[in-house]
Length: 100
Image (cartoon, rainbow, N blue to C red; front, side, top):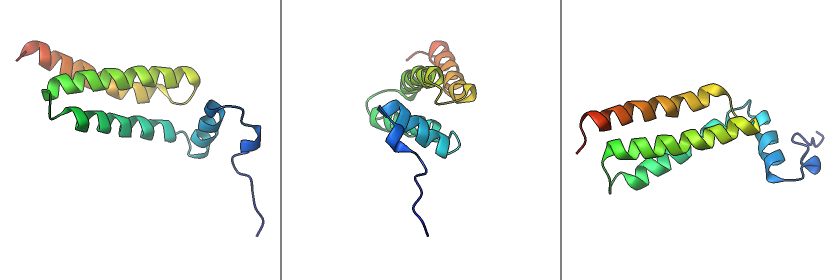
């Protein structure tokens, strides 16, 4: 059984090329999984101090901005950004309808 250089990391010059190669190896699911885990970490770390609606507004906006960056760099598809934008819009409407 031979050794195979699947990722070709010898041609990688920076972290973006390594991330792009790993994202392509996983079929484009690495960056969305990273975004989802970051979203969960932000929610779990903020839920004890703030109202859930404020936490959802802030965290979904932050994840959407990172998603736009990933879209610009070619790390994700448009549907990855659509999910936090929908959560942001819903939680913002809920916050505006019934503020504290």
